[in-house]
Image (cartoon, rainbow, N blue to C red):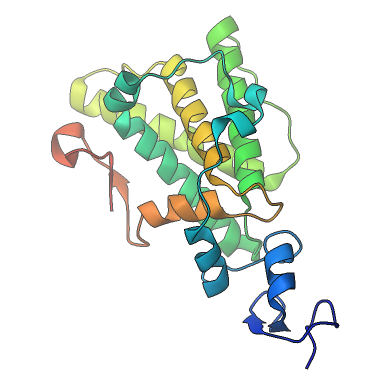
Length: 223
């Protein structure tokens, strides 16, 4: 039998994206390009084991907000915030899949993160609340989850410390950190979900919540 995609080479492996058998060459060339590969495909997982994070010099410098400085001290002091925002992104990806069966891609997530970061950058620089216009429902869902997490974070600070000390500039830097990490972790292919799968691996499917620093150990999110 011939490959279900090229119809020329012999089939070698079952492809869950096409529900049929394809050749190894089509699998390698079309993986996450034309094929909407499920995250549990064993050939996809095998390929990812050999993929390394993309070097920073291969990425679009302007897309990484180079003017924003993020120190190791910032990451240490704002671990709770970064984990909380990571969980919001994970929730967005999971909710989008469950609502209409559409699987969110890294491109969707990174585009939404870029838009959110630019909105916070405008807020920090001019004190004006400006939301990047978008008709993309997935981007809107991601923005809602992120804003809800920021609001919940501030409410948690208010409850346990007596006031909220989280600044918009700190939210901006946390978003830019997650954006840079995503740009490095995604394969760059149109249908890649490598970054989303990385975030999903950080949180089990069980209930998660924000915890007070004194009860959460080294993490804000308690799986």
